[in-house]
Length: 371
Image (cartoon, rainbow, N blue to C red; front, top):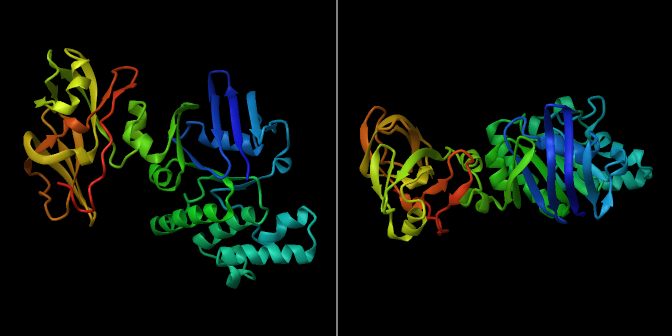
């Protein structure tokens, strides 16, 4: 295991914009950290800088306190799993797994023992004689992971490794990668644009935007208490509905979603401090419920089994989603009433998008126990 520290890390590909813009980040021994963000945010470039595939224009990369930014990739004791698998097509699974060990000078018996150990861990024992063309996508990904594990590196780097898999395999491999990370107890950095992967796999999520770190924290910290509107809208499926809102002079009501809404007692202090101001108000789908408050027209109904998502248009033209229990769904085109729960509202500063207030933490409902 190893501790990784990035200090003022910067990489520019042209003068107009930094792909990675002075980021500072510490990743502890054995931690599984996911870098997540939209395309072009700098997450893959950050990973390539750590791996040594790119060189920084400024800043430091320290592994257990040792600067490595001047070292070649092979001297950094890192292993990288790519989106494309990067297997040798003319080699068997066994030779793919053992290739790096041969380059490091291990004896034939040592290589065989290590390959057998990793093949058993990844359930590849029956596939060792096959070549990559004879494997499924999930099997190829396991071989790519095995080739990294067999080296016993200080750091595991994953660059969107599940992007080429179908939905079922992605779910399966998410669980597999997380299980393996616990078994091998190695520090892992995982890059993805998929917020579901980030939320389900990470010990800590690092949300990136325009080459900078927007927020870092545990998945639930970042979901429940987003530091900015960008983080709030990026994490969550469907995304949070954020609209302009006007707080009354006494902070008791808010004009939003085409209606005047009462502020619950336990949030009065938050809104009273913003009296007579315009804010950006955000609500997640689970906090827009069926109930007599605001008229809405149903645009789309998504029946997902354990829950149903209703996509609606509100009187002010806002499009929002409501998460409800199965069996209660209206039909597309119906007029319904919904109740935005201001007790669960997030408040952001217009313009900067900085969070001004998040709802108090609460225990999630039991399965199926939602409106």
